[in-house]
Length: 588
Image (tube, helix red, strand yellow):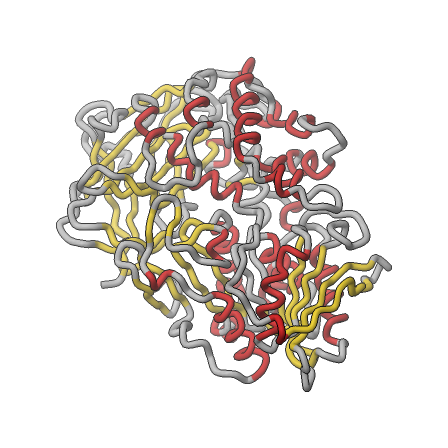
């Protein structure tokens, strides 16, 4: 089952952005100004590096990125944009790099971003139209800045944007030890890139804590210090008003009418956040605003949303996947702020890459990506807890067999050593699924008789009974190729106490079956090959990379191995309890 955490780990780690070098740009076309000081409303000054087109004849639209990852990381981007006629600033956020003040992740960026926009609009090289660039944290702070409505912010291009409460610092209220790693990366003034990037070091710490059964709330003690941010994050285990304060209000979403280009990927670690922003804006925004919001979903991982690579997690994509995103950004900025032509790539408002078919497709709306959502009902003739003796997924009718079951014992740490030695980014490795045989439920469809596109969001409706007040589930969908290979398509995670709402915990008080709706699967678009099958795996989350629920019903962050309680999970699929995987089939 733990192989399903490949995507979950990527979602946790997706928050960090590491710059990738662009192709060499003619630096002779660029003038650089070092150490520009940008005053904020409270007197704090941010440090910026300014890249200007050499010999700039007239004021032009200006771009900036606001980053906690040290401004020099984006030198290549600054040179690129300035060489293409757009003044570009790399700005250290408050408290990081050469900027003054104290760094408080996420919370400071809205007002600071507003002040940078308005300062930049007054500079002699700027024509009063300002935009932003960046992904991950620098995608989030574009939305944060926009909610402050700076008058001169003409457009935003949020890429791989985390949405607090949706995918960071937890996904569906289930958190990650990765938080400590990221906060170490962004602590103090200097870059901690070598410490942050030592994956074996962090895996060793996570494994040790997992095997000892230490409480998640003790995570801030690893390296000492107050760790105020981490303590604050852990103190909010569910979506609440504190999380709401980081995002635009409904009124602010309704007020957005600037052109927006959102970019994410099928394997982007912050895809849930990017879609939360996009869907909310499309739900609340005016008709004009919706018409001006474009969406691109590539086959990329988190870093690939800025610099696409043909190989991701063991998969290889076609040449069409290698979109020149810096060029597209330039075209977007010129179209929205300088009267240039609309980018050719944006044929419709939604562009998505169909893996397997290796081509881009287009739709007028996100809903238009899916032609039909069809239920495939779960069934079995024996307990479906074995990969090689699995249950079935049938489009014909509700299941008839008796309930399937597994026992999850949180004291079982047998998979930790294996997990620590595997590459968590691989999408094609089924080692951990096979290692968890007997401790999860597995269902397969029959082989597809022709290539078939699935595009959109899977859903799972499952009737489940548990004999403890709480536990965590993970549901993952794979393509199983004719030769037995495995490709992770999408997954979802769910804590039983939040089965009805992420805002209100309700412990399970009955052994009667309850319906659990897994409706936060990540987006995927792939052409399933002829002869391939779909595999659904439902099981516990028991990973070194995820906060552990010991099933006692207490405060999960404070539970330890002493609180561990084995849970028996039964999944029903009879006519009275029709459990089904809803598959989003793509347009013909």
